Image (cartoon, rainbow, N blue to C red):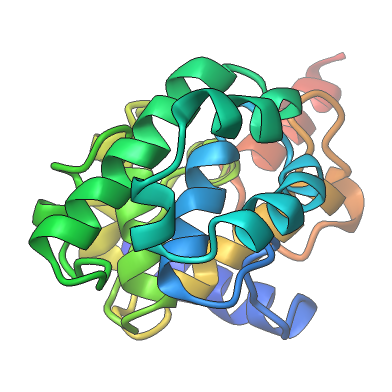
Length: 217
């Protein structure tokens, strides 16, 4: 099976299994999604969703966050981990958005990645979820599942993003990434994947290799 054919199979199967492809972070506008995504680094989305209501109640806009005391932001986000760097990045990003972009979150990966603490994963999420552009959010679930399927053979996020852009339907790529997160949590676990019941096992290199190993033993 060619890579594009396998990718399309995965897109179709995961769409059927997880029809509601949405980001699990709570937000009401692009700036809040940008902040929540920065907080989610090495932290669960569930934890972030517990922290952001108080943070956004006090600093609801880029302009308000830009004027915040970094120490106060640190206190509000403390439980998300790495709170000092995250607070510095969030206030710095808010200052640039308020000062250089009129309070509007940029809509390109190239500009977004110039903001403090914003990498390609975050930038792709913003351009995909907010602006509806083709995006590939190369998080840990997408990287793991893509390697197991045999769509890529690298764990480098940029290389995974680049490779998948070549084989995924552009209008499906963003939702496909969200569905990979859901599938990674529910079925394709890092340590204990539930391969027998997986909707992708018929095209999965990892599953095929497991079956060969079982035959040999």
